[in-house]
Length: 519
Ligand code: NAP
Ligand code: MG
Image (cartoon, rainbow, N blue to C red; front, side):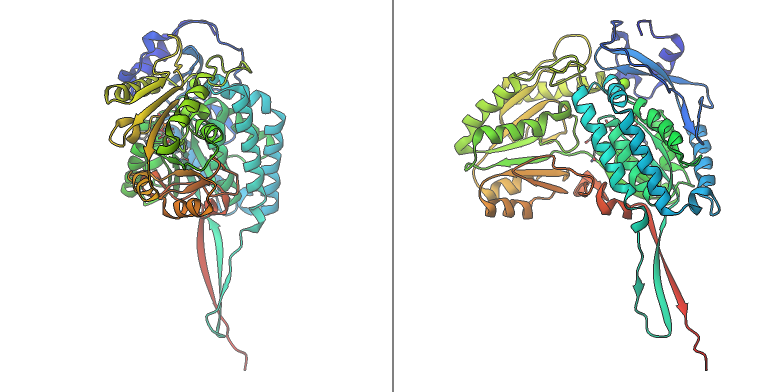
């Protein structure tokens, strides 16, 4: 699309709570890098695409150039109410969904996975267009989403209760039942994969759901919604309401008939979600939040290989990764050699058009994130860290940032404390195990961590002591559908993925049956 932003959209942008932080005046009107047909732009409620009650729309932008890709219906409280009603009906005791054999539920999920597989290239293109991640990465995200869905499909008929000994006069058993209507609020960094991570356990357990994708990236979740209808999910089981956090998101968090809210996003908003749950109906809350994850590299390693692991740990997905290895702790004996390799790897990274197969890094998501990253980079420069490479915005169109490596980073610097969510590596120096454990844990976050060493004892000592939901030894980002993922401390509550996440969507009912003896 090559047109100016329509005034109705500009008005909704101007009225948005975060509008003052944005720079839509800078939106460029260049051609998109690739034309991708946009099929769905409305809210998905009760298996139908519908306009928002208010009739309002908001733009989703292409991060490559800031152009408007499409106008999206803007859901708010009235639409969330409609979606919750549909989800409640779908969850009725006598509904098709509730009466369904769990095996069939699993087949529906497999069917959805089949359809995603059929449309993999299209969904990946949609994701790259809306988010800016490289097409190759988007393909990997969609493949991982398919794997996640199939993993959860297999669980449907295996959610078992137990019998509990309470003496011969009673039989006591437990049943695991779906919590009911769930609300799900997700971020923009893995738009499709986050939706599937949330849908998987909710559908497996027999819940019905209302999902709000991030304002920046609504397109792939809407397409996924269309596929759920095609797969044959009953109306109302899955509802998708694009819109803004403080309106649509808050309506979900505050809704008195939503029994559980699953949130992935910033720690700041995590606090708001939990408060809203407390103030409304004490709905269950699971939170996957931010991180400042330590990756510790001892001096017994192949330094070049370690630098490669550390590079991917921070630069994958343009640094827009909740579990990014954003504090690289390197032993003083190999520090200089490590920095040299880290610099070379960052220098070799090709930044540009995410649809180009030679590109390693596309744009950041939006102007707000670009500004935040540049502010943190500038703070690093001011606070005395050494810029080994990068340190600037790349170009002046779109939201590109040069892959940046800082050495001589100390714990007190903002770049060592705050989540940057960008392609910025902060390399810190350490000497002893005790010191690095203490420093690694000196944060309110606790999402992930890594350690690189040939010494099994060192690896185990660190793995045991670190306060983080994941510890990756001699690797990073080793996430699979069956591995629980989530944070200690203010990185979250509860877990996504694996058997663990099923618990977030289940109530346990204890049934005690008295045996009346026949005389
Ligand atoms: P965010 O600002 O917290 O937004 C996440 C979602 O919450 C968006 O859909 C957002 O809506 C919505 N939201 C904002 N304010 C809200 C409110 N008052 N009530 C209800 N919902 C609200 O996070 P982000 O910047 O999009 O994503 C980056 C963050 O996510 C990082 O901190 C990252 O670490 C974290 N993250 C964590 C994980 C994990 O698994 N632990 C995974 C990925 C990302 P809008 O559309 O209006 O923004
Ligand atoms: Mg977008």
